[in-house]
Length: 469
Ligand SMILES: [Zn+2]
Image (tube, rainbow, N blue to C red):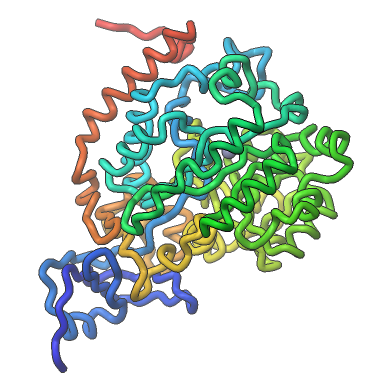
């Protein structure tokens, strides 16, 4: 057989391909040329087919497509330990919206860098940021410096405020001064991040995220949909998030929210509804009729305190063929590594279990579809981008090795990643980022959070006394 050349051969792994047949090849190998996957197959076959410039021995560890976090307000990662409950406006020292509005470009850059390093360490190679960055330029630079992928939207596309009465922590004078609830501003900014997509090789791409939860007029919804469709990018919006939102929306418009979106012609297979915690039967029918997608944020669902009253429909939707993906929303009390586990237990608590196979689909192929990039990402297949994660065979939670899908979905968490490639480049190796100093970033992010807290008279420390020598 004539041997072919490749840049990199990952050998001796348990390859969870997430291809159409969901093949697991063990022992398997993966050949990469440039930014793309050239071949995936049995280890012995690929070793005999390819002369590789470099190779990585996976030592029997799991190899999988990079996970995609389909909904991550990236700067909220630095809320850790500052807010106990963003919804309890009376008990909090300030509104969550005031905290959000105070952020500087430097704060956003370092928070994004920290969160990106953490995601690489958890096997994530991309996140979708839902339009809550004010300085997308600084944040994009941070993402690219670490070597991840991301999708960015213009900030806070909203132009009506009635439903925010149900979510008082999400609105404040300081926030609306920075991003006015205003049609002229939002309509003028819809395409502000789409210029990024002119270069297909970039790591940070643009899309359109309308803030939603009822805060968009029909004019804004239809203009955003038209803009997204013309650019070939998905349109995302929050909906069905919290109690009260749906009732106010019905009072104001006369329709349930998703039914209204369907009537306006903005629900289709490229439209992604984030949360969908609280929808009525007509809205469920609108999801099925239009083929729209859903991002499920299980940790956020728990944090809202509605688990006992909200109908649990995610398992049923997945069974019905709705493309459901997973997002962290804000990584206040967790990391994205706990998403599949949280979804697993949410479904168990509600007595409608979801299999580990379905959870992996939600974090890979379905999340790639939510990004509008399912032809490029989400599985290990020839022609797709080489966004690849190699798990350490020495990690906690890596055994017994009889069912790697179960381990990958539920027991292999933070600290189990050995190597990560994004676009064919090694950006994480032997458990550490290759392009940035993670300790330098961690020091800078701690200083940034303490300074933010001081500006707003907040105490970001523990309730217990801290002794300093
Ligand atoms: Zn969100």
